[in-house]
Length: 541
Image 1: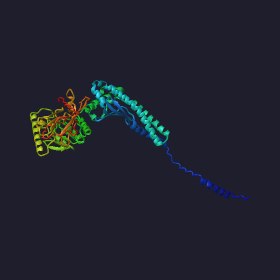
Image 2: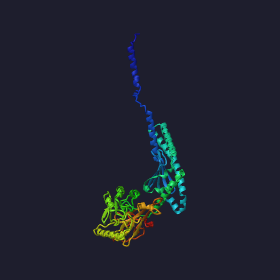
Image 3: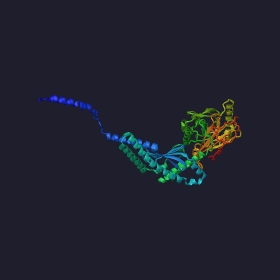
Image 4: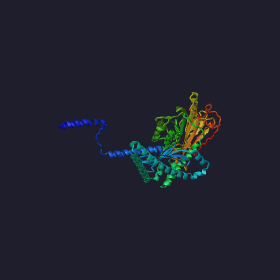
């Protein structure tokens, strides 16, 4: 047999292999080798930490809240990620307070949601139970904290594991994420325990309306450095706020509607900077349409004091002002140059936020509080000038809704020419309907009498009011008197008052302008009468 050349033999071998190669599925081309950075393990670790943190945070948001009944209050407790830690207590609508209780990447949030009517009524019916309320609250807080710890562990592990499974799609990596989340939570708890500072209740940081009433937490100097006492002080806060909620829950049945005009009446701030914080908070919380100040904003009326007035531009509502006997013409000219401020004097009238106001400044300037000869006669003369201006406005077809003066003695001269006149000066609240039908409302000191608060045996409270007006008739429908305890006190009270003609079952009475006042914008049902609380008054300083 002839030898087949090796070249031919190799060619035939290749031809026979072609069908076999075609019959087999071609293997994929191997990927080109990637340049793996040296830091890839660190990148994986950082990615895992990001998944753990995000998953734990989502778990806390979804299922990490615990609703806890604390005494008569319904509260919500939760842990939240934080760079600084600490405790935040939200007391709606008063504001919030923060405690530097610990340093850890988690913060304890406590929201005081509402007062439970049934549990509150038990305390009202059995006031002797108030003595044991603090111990009850302490036990409730301890139970709620324990429940929160268990729920937080479940929420953190579940959230991190679920997100790890979604991201990596590998059970082992997902379980690793859950385990790391549990480790981080345990480390955070250990850090919080190691840095726990029960003395933080000595220096709480307040916001909202609470920033002007820090004494609500009680006498901080009596607190000792024990955790159970820390809980008791927290319980005292809840107890005091419970009393405030109880007061507001028993207000008369008048309900302002969205069209109601809300006027915030302040007076006699006497250079107390805390007054501006209270005003700004009330403007926001009550959606105030206009602020009315019946004078004595200053103490001596000097140009050096004018900087005290600058926050008025940022209060969030128009500001209507009349001069008091502690306010000078220098003060008045400075206010006239501020934005959003309406200064009234010499009977001038101006419409602000749908209400027509007219006023006259105090004819006396007595920053030293001396009683100059002829003071009473000058007040009566000023009131008579204002009454004449009010009659001219009514004759011109532009009747005034609210008149403003500083001293009540001047206000009495406008009786019968306007439905409502507002005043201050006395540092105590009062209200009456005068002989010819005009209602006189005297506001207390929104500045707590300023430095005068420390002159007497008892400190003066901080007082202000929210007045509700019907938008169509522009008549007073109701008012809320707000009182914060003075220096060293721990009270906060709100009481609602209804004019006699608006109380349930009352008939209409003639008004000073000869018309019949309209009914409230949200009339109370006749089957649920509620008496109007009487005005409180305190001795003048």
